[in-house]
Length: 239
Length: 54
Image 1 (cartoon, one colour):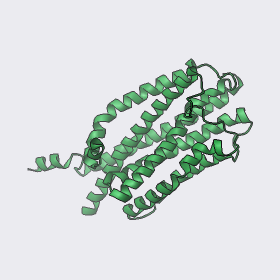
Image 2 (cartoon, rainbow over the protein chains, first blue to last red):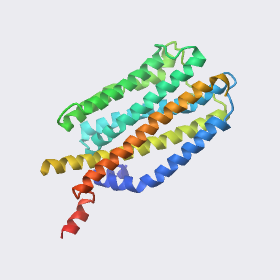
Image 3 (cartoon, each protein chain N blue to C red):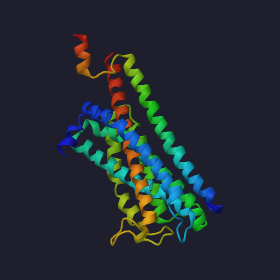
Image 4 (cartoon, rainbow over the protein chains, first blue to last red):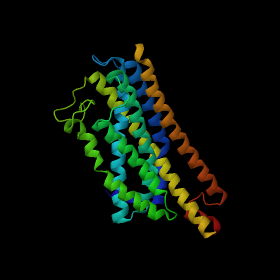
């Protein structure tokens, strides 16, 4: 925890990210390469869904990370509103577009998976609709944080939206249990352990790790950019 | 990958376009801001700039 407080200072965070980024970039590229090989070439077809199960290797990790990204936004929102951390607002600005892109990928790949499996690209059931709402919450966060001339006001408004919107996360998670949906129930993160065969589970977890590395990499690069942009704005105001 | 290949390839293409595009946009935005900082002599940390000024 002491280490995390150490990183709350933007200058220290910048130095930390510059040290970490080269190794992280390499690890991300390697793990994505291995993940694609596992997902497209190595893993077997599913006994029911056949080859279309390969869409799962990009759909499920992006869904998990879109949700985790929003939980991060809410935590950063709390850090901004309660402790006024200088880095929290900058990191939230950096993370929101990354989370939005992950949510969009999840929706598109889910739609492309739904057509051959369900016979339709889209259905207004609880899981799909709550995921679409998550995407709109991300867009709302991005729009609100940039809607004011005073950046601090925008960041505070976006932080409030992040905290209110976090209620959507358990709705997404449990929507398949609470309502009748076309979407299949949880098969990895569930009580009693995963129900997926290890030959499919391992590539899925590997891809989740690779997408997580990419998420962290993008957030670090974009946070660095936000810190530099803020420095530039301050320099221009003082000039 | 039989008749479902079009769906599988489209899904991976969507991932490549969206996340690849975001990565390129993030890196180019970082380079642009860094260039602007360098033009104003603000590309080094404050302590280094103070030392250079002395």
